[in-house]
Amino acid sequence: MSHTTRDPYEEAKKELKQAVEILGLSDEVYEILSVPERITRVSIPVKMDDGSIKVFTGWRSQHNSALGPYKGGVRYHPDVHEHEVIALSMWMTWKNSLAQLPYGGGKGGIKVDPHKLSPGELERLSRKYFEMISKVVGIDEDIPAPDVYTNPQTMAWYMDEFSRLKGFHAFGVVTGKPLILGGLQTRVISTGHGTAVVAAEAAKKVLGGIEGKTVAIQGFGNAGQFAAKSLSEMGAIIVAVSDSKGGIFNSKGLNVDKLIDVKLKTGSVVNYSDVEKKIGTKDPLYLDVDVLIPAALENQITVENADQVKAKVIAEAANGPTTPDGEEILTKKGIVVVPDILANAGGVIVSHIEWVNNRMGGWLKEEEVKARLEEKMTNSFNAVWDFWQNKLDTSKYNMRTAAYALAVKRVYDAMKLRGRI
Image (cartoon, rainbow, N blue to C red; front, side, top):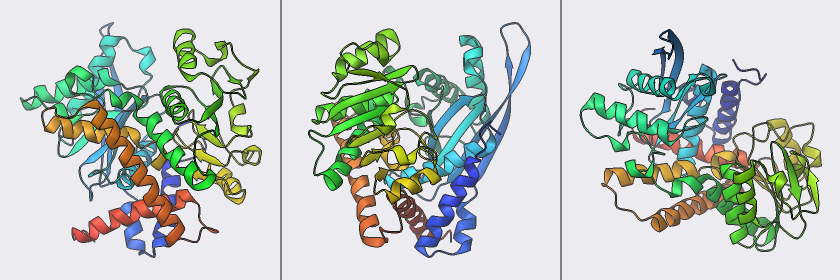
């Protein structure tokens, strides 16, 4: 288990249980959906640079395939454990369902600190892991992608190893690949841009539009940067951003292009000069703004600090930035939270487009990809919003609950139609 006291699998099961109860489904449905269809655990012997052999543990959890082949990332982290991988695969089922993608949920992980490995050791570990799960993945079976501390290079190794084993070029077996191997440029902006699209949709419903509205962003990695850029282009005013080293505030707005340039060149937003004041890493959470984008780590808005949050709309670019007890407080305050399984689905949506493009032999232009991403995110938001407003008691349930209920309903309907239940 990781050092956190929360068991992500237990949390995932609680969310599922609530959705099943809201939908009036049977206990048997909960029992079926609460466990993965398959969990593969592998021991991975790797020859290290000094000639020794070190054994790593890896997993691939395949939660549900009613809607299609499994889809989800692979993470490399010293705290990865089986319950985390299972929970993440379950959340991918709901994320894919919400986005109306023809995918079920999958997730992989290796318990390793990749920073302690040489490039050669990392390549040998990656290839061996994919070789060992090669019997349970495939273009029509399970399509991995990058996650924590994996990247396009990792996907290139996976694709090449799988192609070598199978004897043909299997470009579509993974997504998030380098451009020259069938990846898409839009994948780079997909998570942040997708979050911006749903934040703007939520602003239309709650605030009358996004233009001229103030935005604070906690976390300025890939997702935070492109959320800021897209929202700024939509006419929003980015007044505050932060990263792990601190934050900055300017009530008149920050120049996002310059800010990204400073971040890339110096490693932190704190080196941006045109500011009214420097602020702390967590301070964007507490500013009196219209829209808040948590784009950093999990468990940022908790029971201890949720009462200090003043934003009217929150769109979760990060995974799990709001704890359940923290969200109870936000809900009572009337703050609309667009949940992570909806707000940060841009990555998997563009992964699906990449997979389709690989199967067609490369056909789509990048502007088409971006337009399809925007259409998917907009449709997903509106479907969840309509379900929440028209099918649930909005005084009792929030948007996250609506998202889970709608996602579970679609999976249940697919299982019923297929005769699985």
